[in-house]
Structure formats: structure tokens, C-alpha cells
Image 1: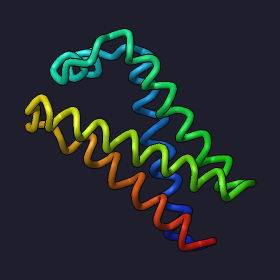
Image 2 (image 1 turned 60 degrees about the vertical axis):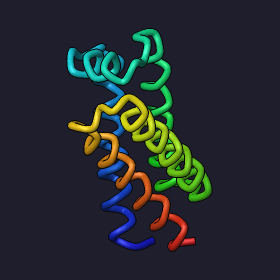
Image 3 (image 1 turned 120 degrees about the vertical axis):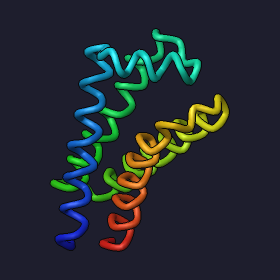
Length: 117
């Protein structure tokens, strides 16, 4: 296991756990952004659960079961591809760097997890 993988995975875990907590807390910025991309508010807790599951899977994969990290990172990549797509579809581009940042973290985690196999 490389140091780069551990660092990127830990940052990805922390970022996703943090944004999932904000989603669960229904933070003002979360609800505002969701409304802008035409996401119904009742979806927010479900999407938060997906982010939290990805973070948890990465953590367990990092500590004990590496295939789970690959699955979790893959799920996060797909999740954030959908988020970027939602921003593009609704032409909410001024803040597309937020899902883009999370997509980059998830992609880096996936690629480094695959490289350490």
C-alpha cells in the first residue's frame, strides 16, 4: 500500500464524511444547491447515505478489505459523475467545481486502489 494511496483515500473519506454530515444536517448551502440543480429535498438524505457509505467502504477497504475500497471508490466516481451531469444538465456551472473536486478525489482513490492490488 503506497503512502500516496493512504493520503488520497483519507482525504476522500474525510471530504465525503463531511459533506454527508452537511447533507444529513440539511445545511442551507446543501438545500440551496440541490434546489438549483432541480433535486427534490427528500432526495438529500438518500444521497447523503450514499456518500457516507462510500466513505465507510473506503475506510474499511483501507484498513481491512481492499476490494471494498475499489467498490466504494467506483460507487463514488459514478455518484459524482451523476452530480456533474446534473450541474451540466441544469446549466448550473458557476459551482460545478464542487462535484468536480469530489469526482477527482474519488477517481484518484479508485486509480490508486487499483494500482496497489
